[in-house]
Image (cartoon, rainbow, N blue to C red):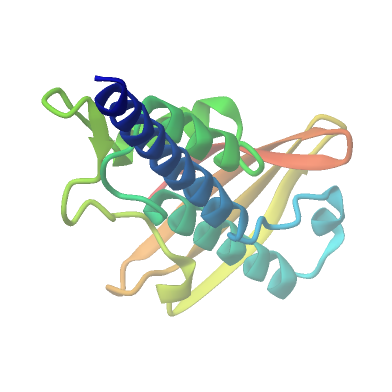
Length: 176
């Protein structure tokens, strides 16, 4: 009886440790994703540098949301949100997570439905331009326009907050 109880306890410990390792591995993998420099110095950069920076933001979002696409726990979702919050404001973080991840009542986990990757990618635009349209101590707004991979004209307004010398993307508005 003591051997059986000890065996059961060892199996449970092993299962718990494997689960912790998976969670730690997920967090470690997220930390490998390069976070774009969000310092306000980008506001003074030339257009080419600003466009490259926006591509970095787009890649960061894409890689973060694709880092794990099934069996995400509530804790995993919070880890994704925490990671995204290095670049995005809380409202946009919530929008990204709600738009991508769906909840499975049966498994009580989150997943990404097949084919749900309709995010814009500046890497696929044939041309683009950016301009800083307003700036204050607390905010900055860019206008991004260009021709996407399908040949369609695109235009976005990107609203950033500024705090402690860092930018956070608070709102991305599709204008056309």
